Length: 114
Length: 113
Image 1: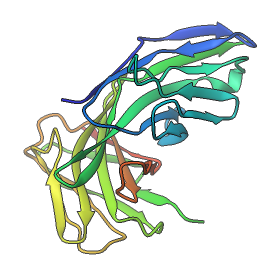
Image 2: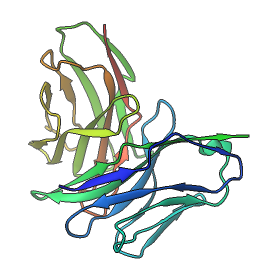
Image 3: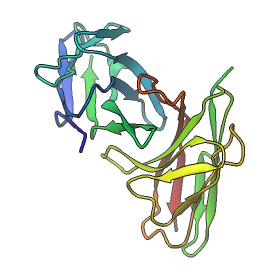
Image 4: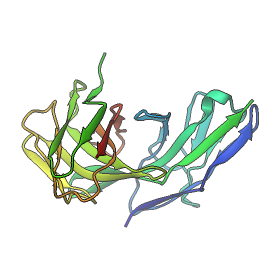
C-alpha cells in the first residue's frame, strides 16, 4: 500500500542554519504531496503542497519539489528561525473506493536555538 | 471566519464511560475525517466520510463510532470498547478531491483516569 517515510528527529539547528527534512513515498498512480506543520498543543496547518511531478510548493520561505523519479518531496528552508520550531509532517493523498485520504509520515520534530 | 471547530479541547473520562467529541465545519466541505495522534507518533485514520449519511472505517476504527447526519457535523464517540483511548484527536475536512488539502481543527485531548 501507499506509505510515507520521513527522517527521524529531532532535528536541532541554530538560527539561520539551512534546513532539510527528507521525505520519500511509495504510491501507485499520481498522488498529491503535502507538508504540514504542528505547533505544540495545536492542530496541523498546511505548509505547502504539490499536485504533479516537478511542481515546487513554497510558503514562508519553505519549499519542496515533487520528484517522481526519486519518489521524494524533501522540505527545505534556507535560514530557519526560532519560530520554526515545530513538528513537520509529510503526507500524500490517495483515492480509495472513491474516497480521498491522506497518508501521513511519522513526523519530524525541529528545534531551532538562538 | 471559516474553519473547523472541535470541542471540548480537554476531556477527562473514567474507564467504562463513552464520550463524544464534537467537530463542526463551515467550509462547505464534503469530506470529513477523524485522526488519532499519540505522543511522538504520526496520525492514524479512525473514520472518514465523503457525504452525508455515509462514512467508512479507517485504519483503527475499533472502539469508535461516528455519524454524519449533517454536512457540517461529524461527531466521534469513543466507546468503552476502546482499550487505550488516551490520545489527541484531530478532526479535518476537505473538498474530497485528490488535490485538496485537509483543514484541521485545534484538536481534543482525551485523558482516561
